[in-house]
Length: 245
Image 1 (cartoon, rainbow, N blue to C red):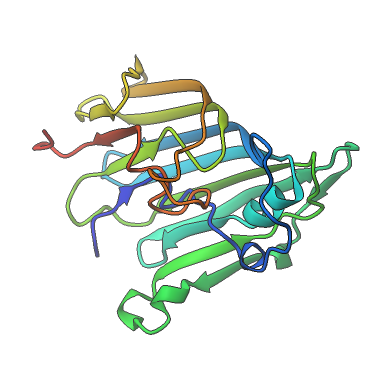
Image 2: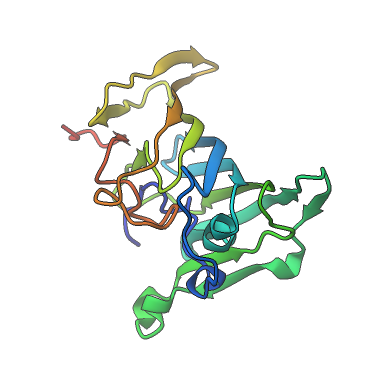
């Protein structure tokens, strides 16, 4: 078992899909080909050290290039110690028609780079194929990654970038820990501070940000939500490790 962090999007993730790799529409000169209307991440650390991470995001596709590139998000988890549940994958068209992704549109795969590495075969990626995408469509995705065992190292840690390859209109990160557990945190390259509340034996830290510009491609990959996307730029980092600086 390895100790996991929660990077941008290690489980967040939205990476280039098979469709993206055969894109036939050229990039545009539009200010943005897509944008995240809202993104919320809720991380709950349990008393035994397990974590439950829930993410919900709504992405609006503004051009054909936008939906061809980012219309099939990838979700990552370690099948040995985590369970992934897709709660909702829904597209609302510009005409208001709502289409849910059928079960056949959610597929778990072995990451291409791990196909010849059986020792890491438990690291899985799940492709969520949104249906009915076109310019003006909005895709909602909500999923949960739940630890089935405490981390071997005894603590949780993570990093969430404040920039992706496309703009983010509203971002909220919530990290909740038992009151007796210390949470150390920092905003690297930024000055965003959390609101802190205590209730029912738990302490919750909430960071909120609005109108986040797209990442400079020199700082990030050009694919939304790959595990390292944006982590060289401004980011919120946190840890329950007792010796975290």
